[in-house]
Length: 264
Ligand SMILES: NC(=O)c1ccc[n+]([C@@H]2O[C@H](COP(=O)([O-])OP(=O)(O)OC[C@H]3O[C@@H](n4cnc5c(N)ncnc54)[C@H](OP(=O)(O)O)[C@@H]3O)[C@@H](O)[C@H]2O)c1
Image (cartoon, rainbow, N blue to C red; front, side):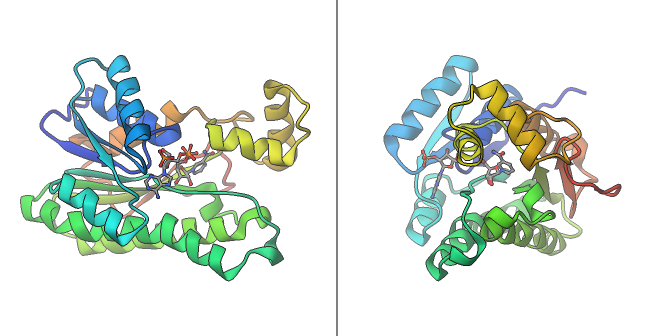
């Protein structure tokens, strides 16, 4: 299958590193003009440079804006008024004892992980339905369906994203716009490396730390290794493609078999 996104513009939120950066690179490889987003100009400029080094002929638009705030979202839409593919990748996570999560943290997780995606969907969906083509995606998590006791606030935000995704898919019913979420499993990013070392002995070498983490904290994973960011990006590129036109309102898993369920 050859995915050609030439002529399409994609915004990937939180794409200066990790899964977002891998998605931005993969979309650029498929010919899309890609907007790279992060909170600071320096961070975005460095990420754009790295992307151009990997995909020399990439069309890249820098969007330095904190999309978790109202003004930041407004700025992003000013910089990029029209988008064909919106990948709501931005998300924060941190382990926290269940009974110690404060009101402020519950609110922050809702604001950053859910409301930022809702705002951008509200801003871009009408243009997509008006042009009768578009792709909206939410990067959810295995934590959306298997609530982790060490980060209930994060699980809550990802479960909410599944509902948001299904709801906006209904809003776009009967148009050429599809809306889906991607249930991402434990993936090797800088943030996850830190997270692993919060839970296992800091003196362990990375390979051993990863093995211990998977065995003790993610034993349900059928992959028994962390997923590479590029493996998530492949699914996002497929869902962004014209070929994925009949997949909407769904939650698609790239979780290494972590979620013990037969249905997606
Ligand atoms: N890694 C995993 O194992 C895993 C598993 C399941 C789901 N996920 C989900 O996958 C997504 C990406 O995770 P990741 O591990 O790749 O994250 P990450 O490495 O921590 O990267 C987060 C990105 O978001 C940006 N960012 C943070 N706050 C922002 C804001 N307010 N506005 C704009 N950009 C912001 C950061 O850029 P700046 O610092 O430059 O602003 C960075 O590019 C998240 O939704 C996460 O929940 C991850």
